[in-house]
Structures are given as structure tokens and as C-alpha cells.
Amino acid sequence: MNDYKTKSKKYSGGMKALLSDWMIAFLFVALFALCCLNSNFRTTNNIMNVLRQASFVAIIAMGEFFVILIGEMDMSITSIIGMVSIFFAGFVVNNGMPIWLAIVIVLLMSVVIGVLNGCLVVYGKMPSFIATLVIMNMLKGINYIYSDGLPISGLPNSFGQLALGKVGIIPVAVILMIVVAVILYIFTAHTAIGRSFFAVGGNKEASKLSGLNVNFVAILAFIMSGVLSTIGALGLTSKTQSGNVTLGDALLFDVMTICVLGGTSLTGGRGRVVGIVIGALFLQVISNIMVLMGINTYWQWVVKGIILVVVVLIDSYSKKD
Image 1 (cartoon, rainbow, N blue to C red):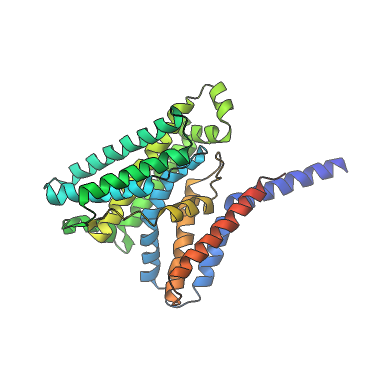
Image 2 (image 1 turned 30 degrees about the vertical axis):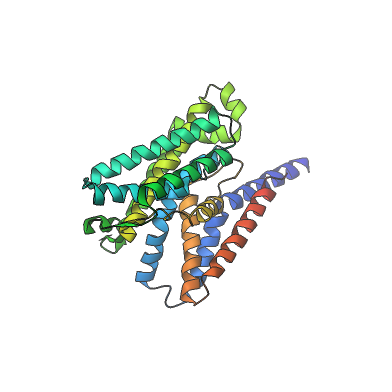
């Protein structure tokens, strides 16, 4: 009898873990199948459009994923996106800089911001929410000073291929998202430094005692957030063909929602890169079907808010014994 209870408990625990880890995948399949009942949704062009629209936001969310994985939060990504967009456009259009060099410079700028965020949290002992909120506002001011609050247009048409180009019927943006996701999956699953993010987020003190350089891991998480935000920002800038300081202003909520939807625990230590991709697609499918059904765009905010509340409640409940 006791053996039966033990096996039952073990089985139910395994099922609970399975559902917790892959709930978003099951829900996405169900949502996609339901949306396919709409003839406008299931066209190849529309599905490719959904994938394209989700790609760059997914890449940005993958960066936030690493920060949340260690139990922290990066609020500065909105201003980093604006910084990358406006400075990249300024370098290319106003200063005649080659595109590759402008990309290298904005990547280095994002690394510096990531290091600054990490140092404020690690060595300044500031809560990550406050530290990155301060950096967000400082960057926003710098962005507006540099651009006078005006967009910078005139980027080369060739740069637009990053967002609008295709390889066969597959958008270049989707290929980039897949490549980034595969690299990050290998990094997190098959390298010691990648697995250390989970360890630090799961138990910081135990990680210190086991010899992990917790401070380095934390700073690296903020650097990765900045770098991946830069890649996403370049894609979004390619889509609009102009630099804009407000490019990332509406993305923070979506990025956080994607991370939570994808199974990343807000307390750290748990999450999957593939979950981020599925979460981004889930959110984009909802937005797309609402547009196709003629539902007011403002209702998307309401629906996304409800989704976030429900998922956070489920996440909190799953931690209870």
C-alpha cells in the first residue's frame, strides 16, 4: 500500500512538472488549431507574417530571459532598443558610416550598458528593478538629446532585407530567430557557464559555496540582455527603415509576458529558450487573429493583461506543495 502511494505521488509529481514545463506548447497548439478555422488566418502569407512579426520581439525576450533566470529584471531594454535604433540610423545616415561598423558600435554600446546595469546590481547592491529603471530614464534622455526627438530616415534599402527579405517563402527574420534560439539552447543546455544561470537563479548562496562566480554570471546576464535587445532593435529598425527613440516603448510588457508565458519563473532558476519562442508566437497569434476578426486594437492590451495575470497565478500555484 505504501509502495502504491509512493509511486502515485511520484507519478503525479512527474505529470505536474510535465504540464508546468510544456503547458504553453499544449496551449499554443490548441490556439493555432482554433485560429485555423478562420480562412484568412490559415493562409501561407498570413502565417509567415505571424512568424515574422514575432521574430525580433522573441529575440529581445531571449535576452530578458537570462536576467529573469537569475531572479532579476531588466527594465532598461526599452531605452536600449531606442538607443540602438536612433544611434545606428544616425551613424549610417548622418555620418556616412558603413552599416557593419555602425552595428559593431551599437553592439559595444549595449555591452557597456549591460555592464553598468550588472555592476549597479552586483556591486552597488541596488534592486535590479530600480537600477535598470534609472538607466532606462537616463538613456531615454540621451536618446532624445541626440535626436531632438525626431526620427532619422534614409537608411539603405539593402538594410530592409533583414526584416522584409525572404529565403524561399521563409522570412529572413524567422531564420535569424531560429539561429539565435538554437545557439542559446546549446549554450544553456550544454555549457557549464550556460547552466550556471539556472544554478544562480535557483540558489545564489549554494552557487557561491559550490565555487561559481555569481557576480560574473549576473553581469553576463545583463550583457546578454543588452546584446540580444540590440539584435532585435536592428531588426525592428530594418522594418521601419528609420531610427526612432520610441521604438521600444511599447515592448516591455510584451517581453515580460512572453518570458512568463514561456515558462520562465519570475523568481529565477527555471525556464527554457524554446519556451520563449513559443510564448512569442502565442502572443502574436492572439494579436493577429484579433486584427483579422476586426476587434479593436486596444482590446489586445486587455487580453494580454489577463493572460499575464493568469499565467503568473498558475506559476505561483505550481510552486506550492
